[in-house]
Amino acid sequence: MIHLLALAGDHIRFTDLGLHPDVFSIGVFTLRWYSLAYIAGIVLGWWYLLRLLDQPGAPMARRHADDLVFYATLGIILGGRIGYVTFYAPEMFLHPLSILRLWDGGMSFHGGVIGTSIGIILFARKNGLNWLRIHDYVACVVPFGLFFGRLANFVNGELWGKPANVPWAIVFPRTVPFPLVDPARHPSQLYEAGLEGVLLFLLLWFAFWRTKARYDPGKLVGLFLVGYGIARFTVEFFREPDSQLRAFAEATGLHMGQWLCVPMIAGGLYLMATSARRRVRVEPIAGTESVA
Image (cartoon, rainbow, N blue to C red):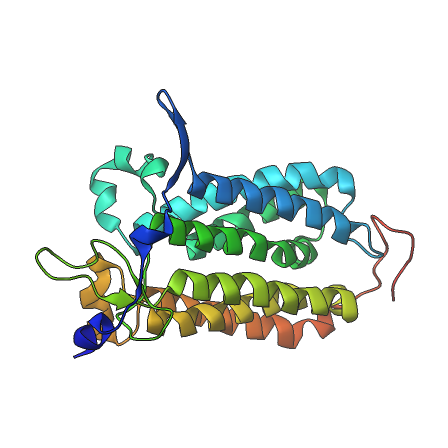
């Protein structure tokens, strides 16, 4: 019934938007929007991180930022890819070389979080810094990557939503087997860009710049985990499950992405609830003021 409803009306067709996964190609080199999304997220995140570090009570100096970006980027790529294979495509372990084919797509945000966290912990231990407070600052810049990443998913015409008859529904090509007619669907990629990117950024911006949350270790990263978890959990109700995990979603009642958000939300609530007890006198590594 929903397919019939989704076919009704004059919906936007993705092919009419003139979008293509590739920015340009020169010989054997092809630049993809997905790659640009990663680059834009890292560069803007690095720029914003430097602004945060200029404020009183920063957990590290500006000179640490370059090394941190290296550790975090490595964690994003390795964690995101290994997480995707583990959570969404375990059959790839039977063909190890396919795991290295990053250009074919397939990255898990939840895996990227784990990888980035490990990278931050290693970086903090190497430099004698407080790893949890560094997590707080890094959490504030992550929405940049989420925003551009979801826009890239939309440009690629992937990870589309369920059939829908809303005025902004979009007809993505090749979403059902031939000769079935593609239904109009929720542009769930844009929903996620708005919630996980714009709204989450504003929430963390307010907490950092308008409250003293950054002086309670774990509060900002906890807020990020809760905010992202709720946003992702909600959007998954409008998103089509991965084809290889459709049976899993039908059997459990929730998508894999939703199940992975449950421990994120629980962990975030714990970090926020216990952050005040971890507060100590913060002597600045950057900035000019001590903060009690």
